[in-house]
Image (cartoon, rainbow, N blue to C red; front, side, top):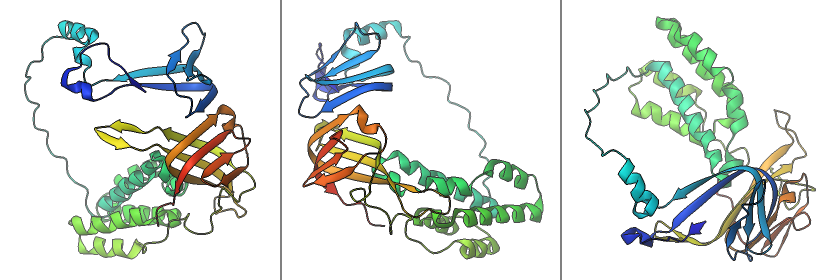
Amino acid sequence: MAVSRRYDGGPAARLPAELRLSLQNITDMGFDSGDTRGIAFDPEAEEIVIRLGVGGVLRATTGTAYLDDPAWHLSTAGRAADRRTPPYEEGVPPTVRRRSRQPEGAVAVAAGFLHSAMLEMRMVRYAHLSERTPVWPLARALTGAGTDILAAGARRGGRREKAFRDLGEAWIDRGGDALTPGVADRLRRLADLTQLPDRTRAWLEGITPPSVPAPHATGEPDPALAPETELRLVKYSAAHIRHEREHDAFAVVTLAVPHSDQDSSGRTWRLRTRKIDNVSHFRLRSDAFAGAQAFRTMGESMILGNDTLRVRGKAVAPPAS
């Protein structure tokens, strides 16, 4: 939330001061974007209670607060901290570390696969990309990787090279469709940017399959047509100015949707994400997360259950595969 300053922030005053609250163990929640006339804390409550407007509320058992204020050093508390803090002194520059030996051959390929898989799985932190991130297949492909890498690294000479080739082939085979264009393309770039021996380069080209469509691209259920859905994540941001740029209100809704056909892992549910721009109304209650509920669209509104979640705005089509 943006908070006002009680002191002269100088040139930095043009940037808002933000108070960020992170709450855990939510016990009650009610929020309506049409009811945002101030935020208040209840200091008498035994738990954390935050009043949102007239009827909104957030209750939680634990939480943390973090202030992000570029002018804080000019506040009374900031000036007091300056007086207690020893002056900064230029230290002795750190010694130059010896550059470690870079992996070669199949070892470099294995390292490249691990790095690529890590980057791919980390995309799940972006809510609107969560359904496109094949975390489960990639985790399945890399099961036991730590032990296997140590065992392969303990070998010497040609046996070591072969052990890492076998390991790379096993990961790719177990990963299946998880070797999305992101991973496959990074492996191809590895061959172009690294001084791989000709034999290793030919082997890498042979085991790297051509680009395949992302697993979600075809035959996936539409949340609005599913008999029931479960809300897994919802994100809402009001219109605001950040880093001197204007941002429109938006929301991201992630739902678990049942699927009639099981995949190879036996799962029958998929994640489906809807991003909504230019949000004009957002309402959420804590019981939106209370199990399976119906999901429907009405005009520009998306509604979950008995109005436990309502978002009105312009839905954004998922990015093309």
